Image (cartoon, rainbow, N blue to C red; front, side, top):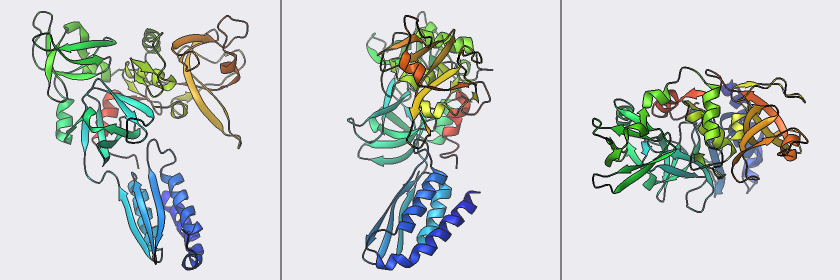
Length: 397
């Protein structure tokens, strides 16, 4: 289907080629073709990219940029070949195999390279990522939820695919409490850990200490009750709504943090994502992506079709009538929901029932959708499966 689509794109381009020689600006047909490629192969640039600019240089028409989709790269080759004077400088990412493990307790991932850029997501210690590109001390990475963004090189340690496979074998353990400390032998601090962070157990329990190794090779000790086997976290048999909600309630009162996906602070979708992650599942990063996960639940005025734990999605409508999802939270029953909202500043409950003390009128008026997430549903992936996919593929295309 994608090849047929591109043939149509190329035909449209060829019909417009007669104008190329007379125009000093990039031809409209070329721009339209690239736009269609982007819509076909990378409709959501958070998970795949077709970033191509067309530049005239004398008699040459230079295609410059990058894509993360092999099929898009092949289509661009055809487009450039059909362009008089076409020069292809589009890179397919990753240019070479590259992987890494997060080496800090919580790594801040940004929309663009640079500490002043927007915080868009986070990743926990021991999480595998694929390396797509490098610029001035920053790596363009892909996380296990397929999110693409930038991470400073000091927050990761580069590893081979074989080293990644070794990391996920043997005595890998996860941090159990919301936060703990890794101590050195002299009780000095080596690092901190947050719930879901991964380290290697490297010896037997000795009193109140378990020796561990961090992804970058540092060693230290944690308490035996502060870790659980990786398999226990990453290979659940099914989604337990009660457990997901128990985890969600344990985050109540924690601060709202735009881009946050750790127990230290979360935004709305980071909150729902974290609750599922700490119960063994990777779900999409943003609310506008989570609304496509799981199965549809019909909304009515009395919320009669909803069950505890369903995800509620809020937003508004664009000028063209399409929905714009901007917020998500957990339904609790009786018209109540639990969410991380910038309007509240922290994770808390609110009501969708008019007349109640904590009624959130703006949320009731902006309620758009509801979804129910269960094992095997689209967008609901066991941690072990999502992590293994990082070093067995770089793109879904």
